Length: 285
Image 1 (cartoon, one colour):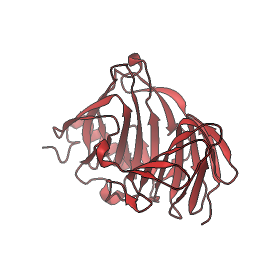
Image 2: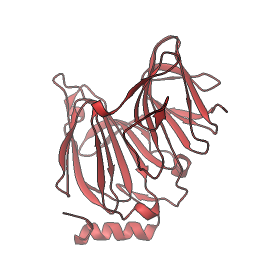
Image 3: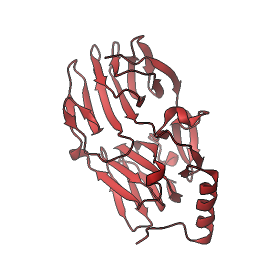
Image 4: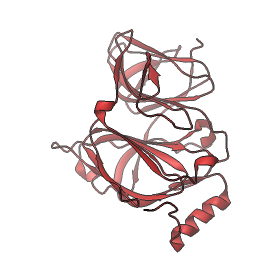
């Protein structure tokens, strides 16, 4: 297997979103987002201060993209224009395909100690799927397998496959893989990835050595890999925990403004016009 080298690394940036949620943006502030196709944005909303997150993300629209929300601590209450309601609890994942359009809200609630921890990833949808009916995949923590691998590492498999064990999320156009990997100090993790796919990692705890050049990356570091068919991570001084994410590039034009992602500027204008005149929702119950 041809091991992927590190193409670039950077630290996530502090920003404020929603109604005043203080978070760190790992992906979404770079110049040409086609370089990360099919992924668009990734936010890290971890805090022990309720003032950082309780304002939440009140009612807002989406069209033409997917949001993948992974909660580690606390809870996220959600509701939408299809009358769906629910709570994303620790270890749970909500995979929402906005399709033709949805209006929803996401309101973080900390645990009894005030801790809130989670991540939201945005993935693009191909043109053929952008105007399909919205849908959810709600995955509870117990459904996500934990796989021990050679070298002492362990991976929670949200989607994709590790050692023949597949995650519960399937039937996504970008053929994504989403792993939560922990490597103890003195151990290593090697994983095969598909050639031609975009491969990214984000360090959420500790520090590790990434790629054949063993580039050291600590908490809040986002990593983009170059071409190849495998990735490797080792831990020397401290254990490291990171998200490993990959997907098949869609290879289509991106017209993106705020919460709406289409292929052309004209399609964006139509979407925002429909929001104003009340015709945005195409599959409302």
